[in-house]
Length: 130
Image (cartoon, rainbow, N blue to C red):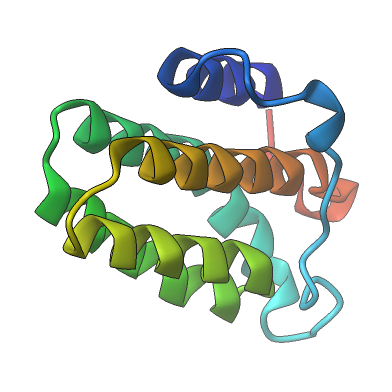
């Protein structure tokens, strides 16, 4: 899955995402007894949500990009990924203003890198069942 996510990012922004940037990231709340058990569900939902964000960007559907980013900004922080939440909030703001397509693409690429890190960081306790 992680390689698929990186491939999707590269499709959108070219090969400007260094693979070395794709490091495993664990949620700050993964050990929390209430939130920890559901962090894996959030992380497993990131690839399709990121794909929807990229699709909206490709269609120049800025209101949709803004709405998706708004949802991700709130949920990412709530699941213990504050940097992901900040980047999603930046995407939301960029999509609402006069869109600088290149800057927005860079922000979306960064968000994708953070998603990839979260996918790589799922602990065995939170890994998807096969």
